[in-house]
Length: 381
Image (cartoon, rainbow, N blue to C red):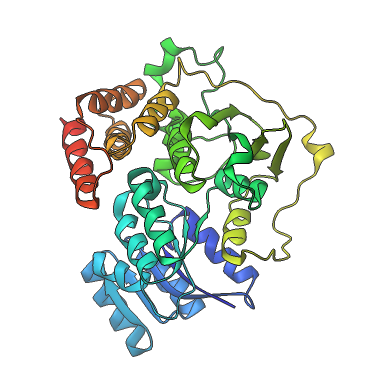
């Protein structure tokens, strides 16, 4: 039985994690749940799974939950609550599914408390991959991937050394604007928020769906892979695969390719992370190859989607630049969603913010957070 703390229980990854726990009641126990502001869903999850501790961002909603739940459950709020849950003595693993930078401090706290972490929040490794992986080695804990792409690579590597790897190939659906015929670069300024939120393969949260449309999602995953698998950026590449069946591949130095395939369902990588090193039986994912028919692959169009090259630049330079890329993108996506800028300007805001930044090499955590705050102000300006 794995005792699991879930940070971000009411979001897309969080609700899928709850499904996995319900599929495997004899193997996974949710002992701590943290949510943003969806107190109704958090209350429902708490009544169903009876965790010992819950937390919600808003202190007023925490008081309401406390009044409703009584003394049976401890209720916390804000960043203090996240840290409390991340370091619960009974926890075996902490799954971090908080959008944005709020998951970084809880991730480090969990690692320092000797907990394995499962990472669904790209920002943690994009911002502070060097620090996070160094701390994980120091404390002898595992950092497990929840992203379908990184889970696929982890499964393909199966403990093989990075010296045996020629390339890590991250697959991308290409997003809703993959077709150059339907969406030439000249039409990108006409893209609406509603259209950008219609992903062809996955049902995800708003931020990650917009990132998939710009391909910033894939750029962030490249940086994440660089740290998760201790490999330089030059050996991390992107391949567009519209069917989203091959979740990623590893090419080895002898030319052999190993891929992980399944129909798109986030429950599979979540379950693998929570049950690792075992595999648990599940009927949730069924892959019918005759029905799928054809699998196709393309080079990414970096002229229409320059986010990939911006991310490669940030990953190669390193230091505080990935944190700047991430923060500027968060601000730009929010501006696009609020109809303040158009679709191509998301990438332009990120590029200009990166160009204005003076990178600090091998930064401390404080320097990373300072760069993050600076980038948000600069991107907003």
